[in-house]
Amino acid sequence: MEFADRVTRVEPSATLAISALASELEDDGVDVVDLSVGEPDFPTPENVIDAGQAAMDAGHTGYTTSQGIPELRAAIADKLRDDGLDHGPENVVVTPGAKQALYEVVQAVVDDGDEVVLLDPAWVSYEAMVKLAGGTLVRVDLSPHEFALEPALDDLQNVISDDTELLIVNSPSNPTGAVYSDDALAGVRDLAVDHDVTVIADEIYDEITYGVEPTSLGTLDGMSERTVTVNGFSKAYSMTGWRLGYFAGPEELIDQAGKLHSHSVSCAVNFVQHAGIEALQNTDAAVEEMVGSFQERRDLLVDLFADEGVEVPVPDGAFYMMLPVDSNDQSWAEGALEDAHVATVPGSAFGAPGYARLSYAASEERLREAVTRLAEGGFL
Ligand code: PMP
Ligand code: GLU
Image 1 (cartoon, rainbow, N blue to C red):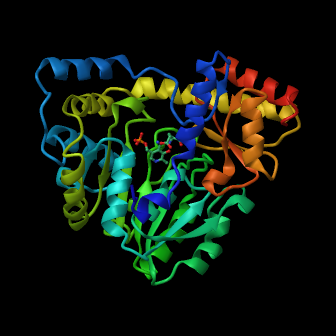
Image 2: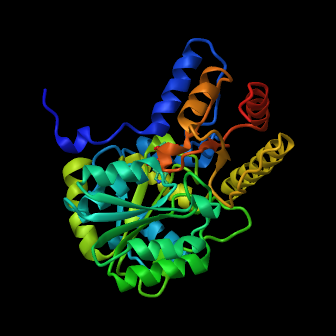
């Protein structure tokens, strides 16, 4: 068979590939501490599961309108309004996961040869999505600034031009856990407005922050007409397998990307959408508890690494941490998995060589075990 250039030029998802490798080892009877894939380790809140089951029992098993059921879109519009964004339900498209939302938006905005700016380290799928759309990537490296955006604004200014079509901003960030400051976001706004750039604000970790309140980029003056806000249910409500997300933005974007949506997935799963309403409206206590646990685990890991003489940048959000490792992070991660049986993702996959990304969505006992194994194996 002959394959299209657009698929042969991308690699499979590194995060999912490593997690699959870890599962293979586990199937062979090896006890792996899997800190690779970014997936909360808590069950979906019970009331959300009940709502999904009740919706199935009530017969919500057919297609829905392509954009998603009106009640969920209204609940999403309410959530966005709480964040300071003014979108009506008609400006929201419900998707099977935030990944699909991002995919549709990138496909709708990026043409062959269009320039897209990423802030490195960046989540692995942005690059692939841009390449699939035929875009070219320009990357700004935040690594020299301990992953903060503000000190890198000059670098961003140097690469953004009138030729830039799209900028993707992910705060709180995967893989660094950084939450970008208001001053940094204002700097992004100034550049985006000056050069008429469309911006994707991927805010999927917005509920998971520690003592800081993340600002939604689309709320800044001049941003509402150029920002597509993407979010999803996987992380905040521990619903990765349900596949539910959304994007919200200006009407013409909804029309264009909506065509891709209707011709590809048709709609998100009907009863899952009903569970999504419950997740948005009745999970405050559950979310607070999960976020509290993530924060304790973050603090524990920072301390455990400090005990081993390793200083890690302390993240303010998400459940990831960047561990400084060998300059050849790929072989470090392979060794850590094969010899110490600790699965991590090499930083190079995110454009951050010399680091490994750890997802601390694991119990304190497993986190302690991971650090012990890495230390004993000579990996720290
Ligand atoms: N954006 C970021 C930054 C992510 O880490 C993920 C994780 N998978 C997604 C989007 C997509 O999440 P999902 O498709 O599960 O909603
Ligand atoms: N976003 C998660 C991660 O970074 C899930 C895997 C993926 O979709 O890439 O690990």
